[in-house]
Each structure stands twice: as structure tokens, then as C-alpha cells.
Length: 297
Image 1 (cartoon, one colour):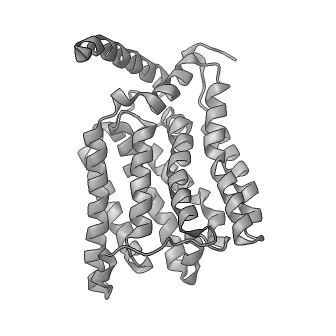
Image 2: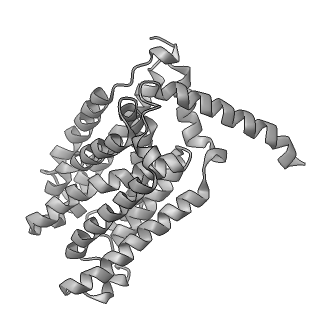
Image 3: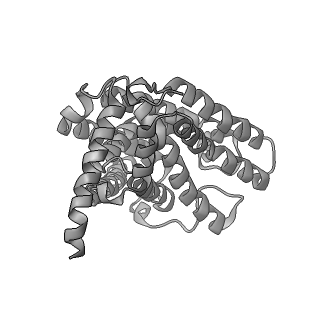
């Protein structure tokens, strides 16, 4: 393969096709088997985006792409941790505001309590804890390791966020038919199902914002994703309140886009994303190397 950074071509369509294929060939059979065996199939399918992403990078023939993946995974010095903490507080605020607004629709203040278990069954409390944690870690390797950049190479981050949110949401589709999943519990009301997929779109903007403002660190995104998973699972919000939450998330996403217009609408990176990333990575590494002896002293 070509090793010149300028010649590397991101392949987002092929990535999503393979990520969907190798996820769904395990998730669809999980619809028809026992919950315990279905949980195993779901875990295997969950690995697909990360595996596909890693293979794309390793087989790319691009030293810059491989170097970037390594830095996104272990380049802790790049992470802007205050930005990550701020993003976590923003989402906690979204949850609190959603619950308070839901009182207008007859919901209870008891939603501020913690649930005693998880929304999905068949794997036990310990298994559910592991599943939530693994989902946050594995998904981000796939989505941030290759996916988001592959879309961002061809358009501004506004449209990248829109497309990613839509495709990321639809990736979960088979889960609504698998017994014991959170998505399956939504089938009691079509509105709840629709809300789940709609909510992924504004979340796509927030996730992109976290990614770009945290130094494009996969670790930072894992932590953020993990916090979201636990807040969504352990805070006792009703499905009705999660519909309200989608409205609040959309408002927050709009505010974030307006406050970061250059980030979301600039096109300077389009067509040269990998080159820009590699140049910034080299400068960042050089600064870190020059400061390391001083820190040691």
C-alpha cells in the first residue's frame, strides 16, 4: 500500500459497511437464542467496530495514521483534562435539568435516586457492570480510532457530527429485538424507540466536541462515554423523562455548536486531515520532549 500520507484515502463507507456487517451477523442471531448465549453474541458483535478500525489503520500503509492511533491511545500528555471534566459536568447538568423539567409532565423527583440494578438482564449485576464498562472502552476504539476522522476528512465537523450521530444510532438497531437489552425495554411504546434513535444525533455533536477538545484522546472519550453510560443506567429516569432529555441534549448541542462555530464549520482540514494531524502530533511530541527534563528537575 502507499505510504505517503498525502496518498492515503480514508474509506468511511467501507468502514461502516464492515462495522455494521460484523456487528449484525452476531446481534441478529442473538434475537433468537437464550439471553445468556445472546449476551455472548452481543459482546462479540460489540467488538466489531474496534476490530475493523484497528485493521484499517494497521493495513493502511500510512505511518502517520498508525502513529496517530498510538498517540490517541497512550498520548496522555495531549489530553485537556479540564475540558473532559467540564463535559462530564455538562452531561450531569443535562440529566438534572431533564428530571426537573419532567416534573411538569407528572414525573417524580424520585428519579434523582439510583437504581438497584441495570436496565438489561441475563448477565447479572457484575456482568452488567462489566458490559457497560467494556462497551464504553471498546466502542470508542472503533469510533475514535478511525471512524470520525474518516468522515471528517471529507466535510466540516458539523456535517460529520450529523452523519456520525445518525449512523451510530442506527448501528444499535438489532438490540431493540434482543431480550434483556435496554433497547428492548423501549418496545412498550414506539415513541420511546424513536426517541432512542433521534437522541443519538445531538449526542453525535456533543461526542465530537468532547473528542476535539480533549486532544483527540481515545482515553478521554472512553471516560466520558463510561460516565454517560452509568448516568443513563443508574439514575432512575423514566422513559418519558428520557424523551425530555433528548430535547435538553438538542438545546445543549446547539449551544455548543454556536459557541464553537469555527471548530464545527471550518473547512481548513478537509482533504488534508491526516497531514494536519501528523504535523500537530509531531509538534506536540517535540514540546513534550523538551519539557520532560525540566519536569524531572
